[in-house]
Image 1 (cartoon, rainbow, N blue to C red):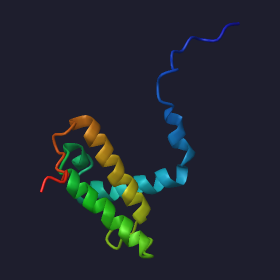
Image 2 (cartoon, helix red, strand yellow):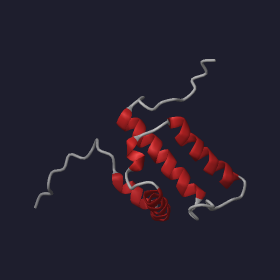
Image 3 (cartoon, one colour):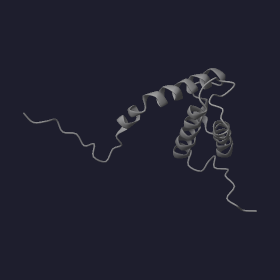
Image 4 (cartoon, one colour):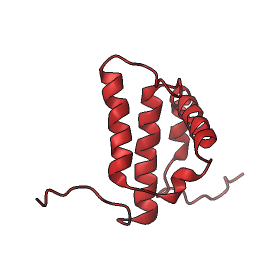
Length: 107
């Protein structure tokens, strides 16, 4: 019996995401918090890349300084970092440079 044909060679193997179940569960909890605070799809509207980077960096600095959880959400700073990085990448891919307000050193 022959196996069904699939043409997946050039497609991303999204199942890799499932290899991080704890990280993805914590990230989902941050997304739930954001959905309650703002709106489930608020992040999809896009926005200033520098503001998203500011949020990511604030969580990274807090974690670096020994704070494991965000005071407001009670969730892991690392999960907040994952969310902010995902928002940046997804919106950059979705909108291109529309919200790219990074300072390119033009001063």
